[in-house]
Image (tube, rainbow, N blue to C red):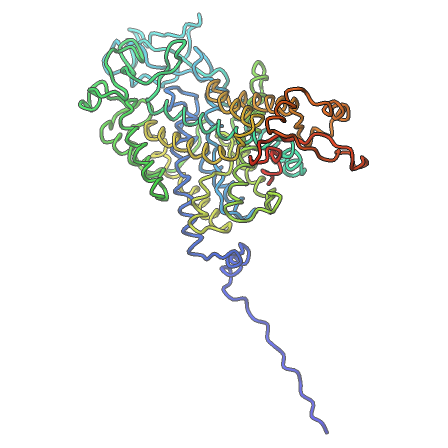
Length: 607
C-alpha cells in the first residue's frame, strides 16, 4: 500500500521591513539604483541649494529690494513661499516621483512687482512714505515705509504731523507713493493662472500646445529671462543706477542718498575707489554701497566654481552677517538685525486676499495672466527637458514618463502661491544639485518639502535680509539660466538666430518679459515664412496648398544663395496622396557641414 504524503504548506511570510519596505517599493529606490542615505543626503542638498528663495522672494515682492513698498508684508511672503513650495515639492515627490523642487519662479516675481503692481505711482494703492527732506535729524529712516493717506488735493508730498499732534515723524516731509494695481488683484491673476495650468494638464492640451511653440524662441526666452534677472540683481547690488536720457542707466558713482533725495549728493561712492572703503560707518557707506555686495558676488562665485553644495546659502549668509555687524540698526532695504531668530508664524495681509474686481485694470491683468501662464508653461518645459536628460529618462522623441504628473505639481504650486500671497511657482534648475548628489526618487523631494515646512518658524530671519546680500544671487542665477539655454539655439542659421536675438534683447531693454516673447514669435514666423520654412503645425493651415505652389518658383535671392553653396533641399509633398515625384522645398537651408536648421521643432523640447 503506497503511503500518502500530505503536501507541505508554506506559511505566508510577513512583509519584511514594514513601512520602510513599503516606502522603498513605492518610491522604487533600489530599482533606480539609489539608497535611503543617498536620498536623504540629496534632499538636504536640494533644500540648501533652493532655500535662497526664502531670502529673495520676500525682498522682491515686498518691494524692499527696489526701495518701495507693495503692501505685501515680508513675513507673509516668507510663509506663502515656504508653504506653497512645500506643498508643490511634496506633490512632485509623491505623485510624479522625481527628485525636483518646485518653488517661486525668478523672473515672474520681478515682473509681478515692476510690471503689474508698478509701485512708484503717487498716492496709489497701499500708499507708504518714502524718504523725503529730513527736517528733523534721524527721523527719515524711521518714517520711511509707514502707511500714509494722500491729501484731498492729490498732493504726493506731505508734511507729516502737526504742532498740535506732532507724532514721531513731525517736521519730516515725505513723499506718499503706492502701487498702480493692488496686490490682491495681481494675486488673483496668479491663482487663475494656476487653475488654467492644471486644466491644461488634466485635459491633455499640454502636449498639443507644446508642439505649436518653436524651440528657438523657447530657449531664447530662457536666455532673456536670465539677462533680465541679472539686470535686477545688479540694480539691487547698487552697481547700476538710473541716468537721464539718452543714457538711461549708468555705473553708480554718486552717493545714493543726499539731503535732496537719492543721487543728489556730490560725494563719490559706488564701484570707484573712494571713501566708501575707508569710512565704513560714514555717510557714503549705506546698504546701497555696492562694495560689500560685490564681495558677496565674488565669494559666491568661487563657491560655485568649486562645486560647493549650498553655495547660494553661504553667499547670502556671508554678506548678511557682515551687514548686520556693520549696520545693526539699518532699516532701509532690510539689513535690520531681527529681534529673535524664530517665532510662531501667522499671516496678516496676503492669505486669502484675492480680489477679482478688475475694473479699470482688466487689460493689464489679462496681460499679466497670459504672461504668468506662458512663463510657467515654458519654464517648466525647458527645466523638465534638461533635468530629464541629466537623469537619463528621456525617450528618443524627447518625452519623459510621468511628465503630466510633474506639470500638475507645478500648477498646484502656482495655485497655492496665489491663495497665500506669492507669485507663480515652477520646477527649479537647482534640482540638478540633488541629481548630482545621487537623488533618483521622490524621497529627495519629500525631504526637501519637509525642510521647507519647518523653515516657516524662521521667518524673522528671512524677512530681514538686505538686498545687497540677495543681489549677487540674482546675478549668478541669471548666468546659470542663460548658460542652460544659449547653446540650444542654432546661431549659424539667421532665421533662428535673428528671432532669438530679438527675444533676448527686448526683455531687459523694455523691462517686460511678455514683450520679448511676442516679438520673438512674430520674428520667427516671418523669417520662416519668407524663407519657405513653415513650422509643421502651419502646414495644416488653410491656404497651405497655394503657398506650396508659390514656393516652387524660387525667388532670385534664394537661387543666388544656392549658387554660393547654400543648396535648398527638397522633400516629398506633405500630402500623402501626392506622387513621389512631386517635390516642394525643404524647410531648411544650411551651409555644408552646418547643423540641421530644419530640426528646430518643438519635438526637441517635448516632455
